[in-house]
Length: 121
Image (cartoon, rainbow, N blue to C red):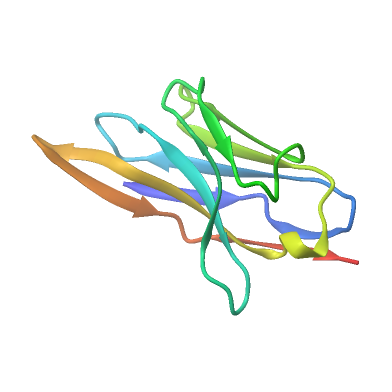
């Protein structure tokens, strides 16, 4: 199983970025997925999550109204549209698939390698 993030970069405050997470390698598909971020010197925090069908989403209070999580199961890809970015959004953003079925009654938690988002003031 692989989770590969892309779309990070340097953007000015008020700008937008769209992150992608391409998931592969699971014969059973991907269930609940999420985006996390970790800023320097801080703990990793949940940014947003989405159900398998995409009908249920959840956001951290700090990003509500600015970020939108979505997924395209046909492409096994999850997205994070980030608008109105501020310097406080600067972090490494990680894709997470916490319950990937790997066999009978077996599940594993997977992480991507992360993509850097830097917002300049």
